Length: 115
Length: 116
View (cartoon, one colour):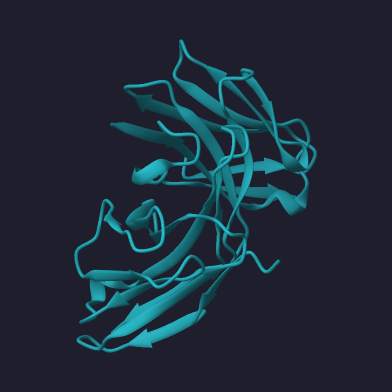
């Protein structure tokens, strides 16, 4: 199993450009998440998908859209990038069984710089 | 609502010394608590998780954490630090066992530095 994969690993955009961050998991998990990580801020939830076809806003959704294309894939789109969106973006998927094994697995991240 | 406070953005210890990373939480319901580790340029990896089954939780790489309800704390410890432990450590809380619809609420992180 590859686990959670993200593409690209690095990206530089100019203000106003658009792009889509891709995330895929091969663990047959129902729930998937997008977080952003900023220095001194920890991780903050952008969007969440409980299952294929459903998405919900997290703590910091402004400026982003998401698509849960199928059970495996959950993409994050920046329609008009702004410097404030410079960050490291992490995708996660959740294994839901009993409480002791219910946890989130994270991808390696996408480092985005908006100039 | 819940929140996490990690005391100390940077902690430095000597190789072989005790590692203690502090985490205090606030939660209106019984919490699930997590410690994740992030090595340079990598994603987050789960170290351990508190699920109310036991107050002392043992994780990977020799780490453990003790849940103290009276102190609203979940501090991470390791008896003897190794150079390979140098990383960023995040404490997280959730009212749901795996984060639920609100995801995990993370602390700001503690950068662990190991001195040779």
